[in-house]
Amino acid sequence: MTTAIESSDLPVQGPVAPDKPWFVYLVRAANGSLYCGISDDPVRRFAKHQSGKGARFFLSSPAVALVYTEACRDKGEALRQERLIKKLRKSAKECLVASAAQVHQPG
Image 1 (tube, one colour):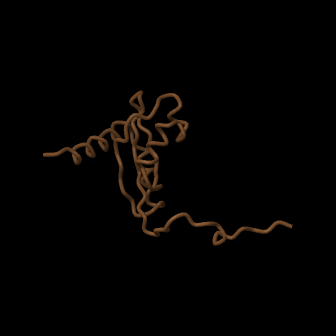
Image 2 (tube, helix red, strand yellow; image 1 turned 90 degrees about the vertical axis):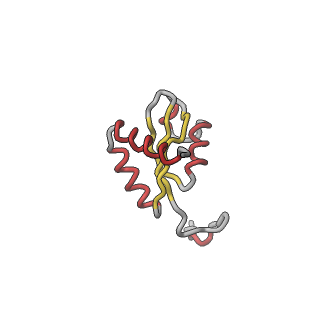
Image 3 (cartoon, helix red, strand yellow; image 1 turned 135 degrees about the vertical axis):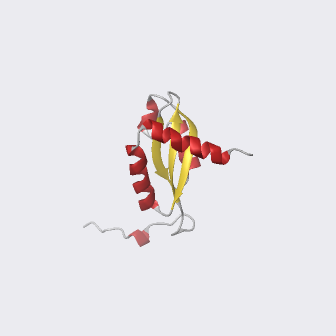
């Protein structure tokens, strides 16, 4: 006889923050293309992409830069925003990247 494992039976690693933000991010590949994804830690996820442990997208052209991040309230909002960004033309995605670069420039 098999028994179901309740989620409360699973070990919790670290504190669980119900209001932890999620992010939509864009990563530039070596060939210039842009990859859109979501994560609760985009810097860690970018490192995964660079190490070859992330998305298959980067098998043909490695990840070279995390070029855009946008904070969202929760995972659901991040997924909805990702869907919208993925529907954009590349030129519109490049505008997002350019606007983020202007925000981060000193002066």
